[in-house]
Image (cartoon, rainbow, N blue to C red; front, side, top):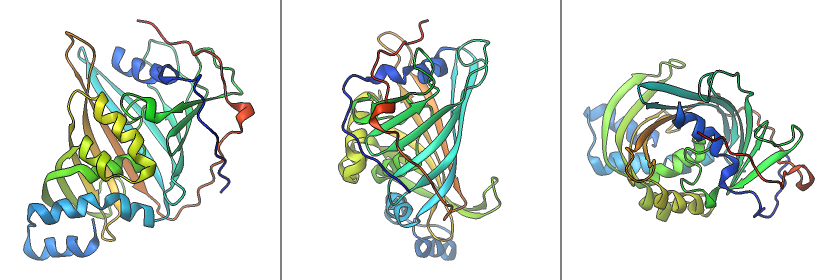
Length: 286
């Protein structure tokens, strides 16, 4: 893997990615799992400990492929943004191709957006809105009101796992077969507190989660999470409450991340400085 690091570009702000969400809104450890099987249930403290270690286990797992979806219902219209890619959890970097549905921002067909995710940064290509086709937009995710938990149209696996460090009121639901690939998984349910997750997060994720703790109208994020027999995160679904402004009803955004094919080869190269767009970003109106 080739990883290139660059300083923050202050000229590119949160407006760089607002089109994704604007379009969307406008239209455990294996031994603990085994113990749960033997007893048929597990106490809340033990269940919480399994869930809170999700990010640590994921970091040790190396890499995987990922599928994401982000869904909301506004004014009776349900809209889903889907993504597919792969992540290297040791180097904390990944790549997603995010596809907006045809009717997310009108009747026109939308070009898939390529996203590169690195600690504290989101890079996007084919963003449109006045950005040259050969240029990338770079956004400092610690400066986004939601820490990029929903803004980019996907919750990346590491952020999804780091958020689980704030898990509480966790219950063990039971063992089942994952519908995606038939793998046996152990299902837990609870609530993640964003502020607590930020305090417990690794340094790479702390800045973005700290921003998110201030940006959501509700710090408590309900979740369902599934681990395989090796204790690896296989699927997590978060239900975020996203503020819409004074006097407007908040929007609930359901974000799902599915991980599979662990150990897959991941090749991600961050764009050089000369390929980063420094101009103003056009923001869709309406």
